[in-house]
Length: 100
Figure: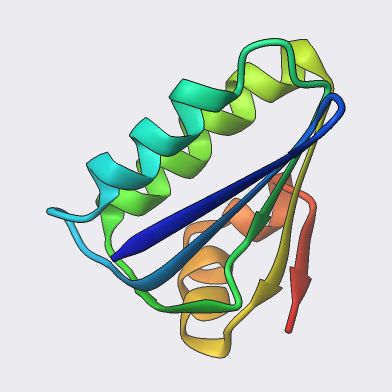
């Protein structure tokens, strides 16, 4: 898995690519944690993620908690397989999620 970050002022966009497996989730989390300080807006672009394990869901939840205190948090371009997981777990109901 590769993770790209883009800072524009106080907005951060994080774009992972590949499968969000248990072994890949720490890299995703690290990319967010290293860049989230001082950000008032965070966008996660999941358009290139076709699988998400529970470790990825944990990263989404912990990130949502941080951004709830700092500003806005949005997940965009969610692929069908990942949307199924977010819907099944109820996370799609508590987060700002936009399908691809």
